[in-house]
Image (cartoon, rainbow, N blue to C red; front, top):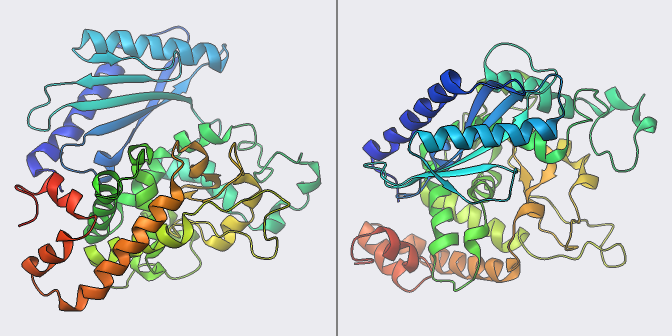
Amino acid sequence: MQPQTEAQAAVPAITDEVYEVFRKKLSSTIWSLHNLIRGGSAQKLTNLAGSYDLDLVLLVNHPGTTWDVARKASIADVQELLVSEGWGAIPTKPFKHGRFERPSLDPAGPLHLDVLPVPKPANLGSGSLDKALYNALLAPLLLPAAAHSDRAAARSSDQCYPPHPAVLPVSDRTRVLQLTEVEVEVVRAQHPTTKNGMRLLKAWVRFGDHEIRGTDKIPGIVCEVLVMAACRRDQLNVPYFAAATRQAAIGGGRPPGVMEAFMGGLELIATRLRLIPLEPAQADKDNPPAPVVAEVLYTAEQAERYRGCWGPGKPPFTPIILYPADPTCNMRERVEFAHWDELADAAALLHSQLASGASQCSSREDWARRVEGTSLRGVARQFLPGGVK
């Protein structure tokens, strides 16, 4: 499932090339490029073989004009420039973001690139970009509740964020995009076996023989969060820029093996990713649904303060899957997938099948025989020459 080393190395080289093109050739009186954030699974080192989708988030200055005007202008300018550099433009919703493809990225295969402009945070400091974004956008959300009590009464009922002047005016979606660099560092910091567990879970969700439609709509970050949430806190690594803010010990424990990480993710799918009604008349107020939380940058207790931000969204259902760089964001609301109960049932079945025979599997051949009769067979068929042997 892992990409070949040569192919993986080609991807960041391409993003560096694109950044240089932007830096040297993008010119506008309406907007300017402050910095570029590289996102996507290839940047996080969790992409599957043959999958090279990248996100480039542009931090944009737009003095003297509205963000709506600057956003449309930046997308149009980027499209014109990338097409002139040999990229193919893929149709998207007008003026939301740009999507491009380089079909002949040898040896990696086709590379898909999403370009998403966002305004530069007003309070962004100097220094490394990941640390500056963390300090400007996430750290204020993690301040003790008492620090906000003097202004809590001034908040309207739909403002879910602490009353920090630089955070409140920014919409949830915008801040999540601005925090892409922080998300990338959270995932990249994890042990290689943990990241391979993420890869295996992604592969099963997308290619497993569970016959559930639409699983390609589940973004990879959901599987990454599931695996991190299944780990003990001492098995998780925290990025350098957040270490000083953590109160409890983290890291230092034995990292999970690939199958241990995968099985932990399966168990959370089976137990947490079910459709539980959140309508007031139906919800159990004394036992509210628990979120899936990757306790790297913040704890479940810290996140709980933002329960009012997590939905119910358009369909009044869970699951609640929190973005690892922003405890106000329930990623479920933007996932266009409806068959959560079916996926949970399939995960429960596979977990039971693997757990019942795990003690008898001491070799690759033993595991191959165990996989033969499970929904993991689809993963083997996709990524192993000749499938399961």
